Length: 475
Image (cartoon, rainbow, N blue to C red):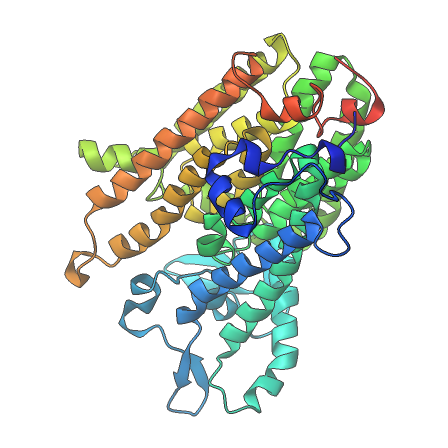
């Protein structure tokens, strides 16, 4: 099997109607005598990276209205979020306000910082590696901010911290695009859907989600190159940044049981546990209450505004479920979905592809979890593109999902500030839900062999992400 070989590439001009018009504008599809694979400069990867940089710049501009500042009475430059700017301009992000809100502007170790909220002592609520990344960016911002103060520009320290964080995460996203292009194999141009995702515009810099996507893609790439230990290390580090990279282990467990090859999976599992513990144990030992803040907050918070539970409660006028009931219900539904995905993966006549299982597991978590912060949708982009490269459907879903953000911001303005009613927000959320269910149905049909699998068709029936494909094992 030749993966990502120039002569085997699938041209979107011939397979994707949504791309045909744009490609015709550029000059038309590739001809018989085209020098495919011999371009001196504009290789697919360089084109994809350029597209990603353009959309990252759109993402930065989408948050720019929340970066402006003004002078306080003491002459210092402070953020200006007057007039509910963060909602009206839909530019809200967690990065800017948490610079001061979590003590990152003061120096010191982030998990040693605390503040009192009511009768509760609060700590940084992010997993350890995410907190360390924020701390590093904060240190760089404090070190370099005197250079910014020396200019006539009114740039608050928090905005400079945001800019440095966005720059670092942009570099991570470029690396991610490079790896996705390799994973896409002979369908390398499917990576356009990642590089030019509408979700990147609204959520590239809403929170710190890009690094976790990078770890997941890095782990997928490592497995495809026959390096399960490295993949495990990356999964462990990703889980120390955000919880969801842990779900990769579920997909590889199903395939390990199906293939009766537990060795690579066990090495991956051990490496994941080791790297996670190496990052977490020092903070766990020295700052146990701060380390537990992430778990405490997630167990005590209620249903987030855009979850299925909140939509049902708003439209059926139901009271909010008690946290204990909500926690049990969401976990039970997710566990049942994972069990169903496992049975599907083990009983299907054809070996499921890695991306198919990862997509279904991550989607199940988002659908049934009590928290679906809008930026979590970024987690689905790469698995969806690698599992189901149907351009019109994926662009339709990502566009609708992108609209959730401004609708939520305008709803959060409140009726007293002319915010939109919940019915408009719920309309977009229901449309997103329907599209995701359609996507999941198509993936299940692929696994069962009842639908066309474009990825297999482009790779002689094999899975380009599978360890089996890289080691010559076939099943």
